[in-house]
Image (cartoon, rainbow, N blue to C red; front, side):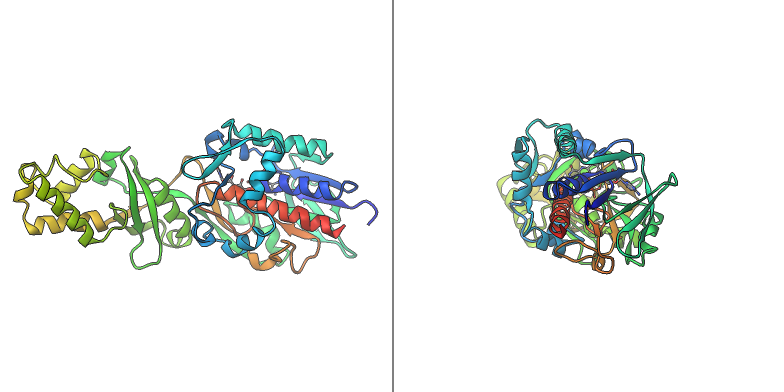
Length: 410
Ligand SMILES: Cc1cc2nc3c(=O)[nH]c(=O)nc-3n(C[C@H](O)[C@H](O)[C@H](O)COP(=O)(O)OP(=O)(O)OC[C@H]3O[C@@H](n4cnc5c(N)ncnc54)[C@H](O)[C@@H]3O)c2cc1C
């Protein structure tokens, strides 16, 4: 190759990182980013509510499976080349000061996603990466003798020696047809990261209530998630519910988002332990109303709801609470079954579960096994994570790895 031409399709997080890292390694190459939208990194500019939760400290993450319901093994492998600490150092080296919150999410100190966008755009420009916006790829064909013919929706075509596909999640199945036409295996896309609806349920009257430590699960399955739970006017949200929606994304889709869920309102603690805690309350405050003395993790409105559900009269005192009522209350606190009907998007944040199957790519280089010179990175692959900066981290890691792999081709 005299002057190789490398086309990056999709100018999001993974595509920008890939283009920068390719051009750094191959300054003589022609590198171009083809973006369907009017500008690059549009999604990054709205991530984290405009603050960009660009990675996570991973402290408290005991396994990749915990945060990457799809693609954990791949991410584990790729982290050897570019991990969260590498991403942290990469952005700081480029002049972005970062801060790690108490919840381990990492943001720019400026709390402004545009700082990340401007940094990446500045690098792309300085490195002389060509940028073409308004170019939606709708087909890709290998050319005999090497390289690819890229077809755009506007009817134009370009020939490239190497193609890096970073088109992000495709909520519509048809968006993946161009990869099926290359005989690549595709996992059908379904949404991930959403809250669940409880239409007409009395709990929704308690909107705004947060319980800091809960465990939610889908009965009869292995799906279970812990963390804060938020009651909204449509149902249940908050980190625990979002994690559950991510891990159980396919099952929930198959069930058309109609399923029972079980909520342990006391952080997954057993019935015996909760019964003990309530007995201690009763012993310390025997003459107080059950209504007025309750575990600190609840607010008075939620507690009143539990008492009503357990058929405990408001005038009951702790020393007057009979064993059956106590058992009903304990059962409710440790395993309330709720019937979900529908889903709701989480503050417009969602990712796609599914995409180009991981079996298509080499797990060290992300090059397509059957089609040399074709690479995939980011959410277009069947990789997605729970909230907390893990999705963008996956994009930086995969973008970097492709940059390095393409760079090593020479
Ligand atoms: C509102 C919102 C907030 C989020 N907040 C966070 C957060 O704080 N932290 C976090 O970790 N994750 C967050 N995410 C998820 C995160 O943004 C994505 O996982 C990440 O951007 C994926 O990177 P990507 O490069 O693979 O895809 P994208 O960033 O989506 O980029 C893909 C690009 O390809 C372009 N494109 C698509 N199809 C074509 C085509 N056929 N031809 C040419 N170009 C094409 C798109 O226009 C887009 O610019 C958020 C998501 C949303 C929607």
